[in-house]
Image (cartoon, rainbow over all chains, first blue to last red; front, side):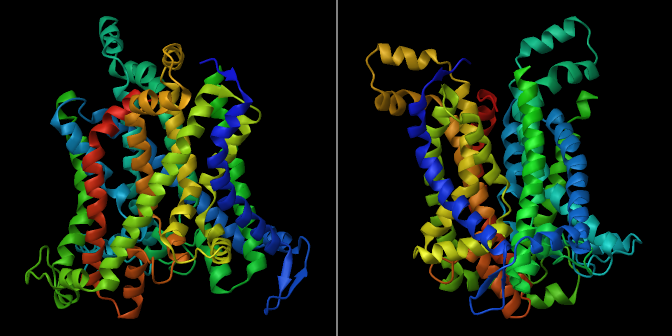
Length: 287
Length: 266
């Protein structure tokens, strides 16, 4: 659509700008402020320059948490996106079952995150949980409070359970927007189901899938509540993702300086990656 | 192949329902039954857990508090996002693309990063422990999302609609309220649904910004889990009750979601 140039449009954006700026800029300045100072308590602060940033960037602890975070985000994207698309493709397009599917599938999205964590915590307990008990009676030695592998398995399962529906809803929305005429034309041309998927459905879903991937990427990078309730980052440090580590440092040890520096590095990592996604997405749109 | 395609969503929904079933069935069990034996459904069916929650104000006020700030946040976010999304979808202005991306970056900010500064900020302006504080804090990630969704819907509405209305003598505010908003009603439904959803499920900021008067149900739950041992039955009942408002909201917007997504450019 060709838009008219109108700088007065800033007035329309003003309420959003004020609200978000109040919430984003003031706290950000506070974080920057902490990140360059050293404190020994009593609200006395000393200038410390960029030492905290050097510490964070060199600390093996940060590298390990970042590595786990990347592994987690990559794993869930690889599972959730194809699975979500497959389910959306198999869903009915008309009739009462559409509503039934949508309502039931949206359920996990509306459960508070700590309840999701608590629910999976109970569900996977080896002695009294349905999943844990079943796995153990099938002969698997499964205990997510003691085995890092089992903890990861549970964490990934929980996230797939929690968020695949978001991909399904978005992909389904893209699918139903395809006019019937496209399918009729494909049938006349004798296109295979794969060709229909590749040349009609996938291009139509591209925009919604980009949104889905961006949302899942950003949210999985920020994930805190669910893993902290499910495993608390354990056993050991095996499921300590970035934000869990951050909260441990900031609120557990009250090391404000290092925590703030880590926050900024963390935020910049997300920003950089999202910017790459975003430019790729908008460039494709312009072509 | 097509004939068996109903199996895929069915199996998926079954997988979604299992943990929920386990939570609900546990909420009807006694603590002894939960810890003592493994039972697929409640053997000694009890409503005691629900009775505790529905009679104790520290419990049920948690739900009321959560619902108040979630509603407040949805109204604030969608209300502020409407004109902004209109500007982004209709006009080009200085720095529009950068502004749009900057808004999105706030969706990326980890709540964990902002928890402590938020506490200090809202204490400083005297809003700590109010519903408004949580509602305002949640606009940080809901406004960008609402702008994003609404902009998609508005771009799907042809500009001729605006022009025709002006020719017919409508003033801008009258056009916006009388014609434009009804046209994108399903978009507003979808945006409101997502705002409700993300505000209802968030815990970290809501917990940080409240103490007593506006404490959300999720925070009450974490406190019970740690203070009075581990009362799994009570926790399960409280968890089950948090699913209900969400389920009601989904039921009401189910048609908007199917139709709304289809109409919008999303």
